[in-house]
Length: 352
Image (cartoon, rainbow, N blue to C red; front, side, top):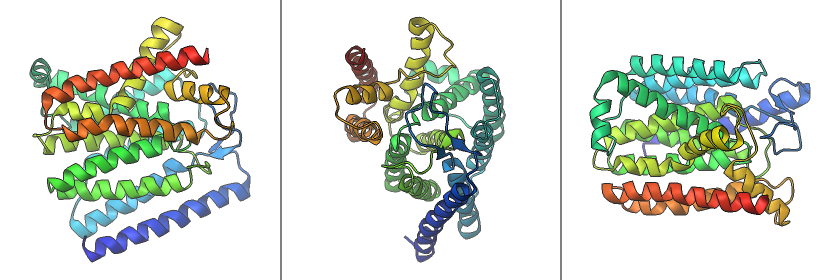
């Protein structure tokens, strides 16, 4: 790595740490309810103390520094990252500020943003790994619908698993590192820098979120992480055609299937709106089971994050090893979905 990149990396780490520390201190000293998560009765709430949703603001602020540095030092301007991140950060910030917005209306805004951004940035996937789907995405309108759906799954998946200390932070860090290594090996230099600095920003956030949560990501942070993952995966897939598209499905299976499975579970089993939150997700069931078995204390929800991410990492390793084998990746991806359903049903029965 060049000297100026090393210097900027060190600056980013130290500035990010002290910026986060003093921003948190300012909010604590002011004792304001602004951005404070103190609604303990929510079905998805598993914390005991009021915690500020500053993660999104911190990551977005540092991300601006990264984009400015890349532009002035390397003439890299990732317009798709800038536009997507800005709009979805602001959308999430509305919820963090406790400005009331109906779930259906928020979903419509998301779709409107995605249609506009996908078209203006010419975001597309070159191949899907399925011939009939490749033929469909060659049609502009279907390609647009498919891209919007992919983004919706990852953004909402990120927001859905956010809630336990380190769960989304560690999960996204694993994904960013895997993508970084792939692009490093294949010398996709522009994307390497973005993924490297995004990984640093995730580590800075984790310093204040894991194991004890001093700050939360909030919706703004979760949407931001989801956008960064989605764009990075799409760009990595397009830049590395020798890697099976189903490998990226393996990499994203937890984020994707949490939303997919939750949607149909709420619709046909619980019989409630799929847009309303509940406390029956995989990570929540594992938390309840560990509490029931007296394996963890009420304040130790970070244990669930460790367990789930260790299992996730072990499950994606075969996919990493055989990422160029399309047939293996395809069948292994569907195997992972079956494994998820099995563990979910097992946890649900034990907790019930």
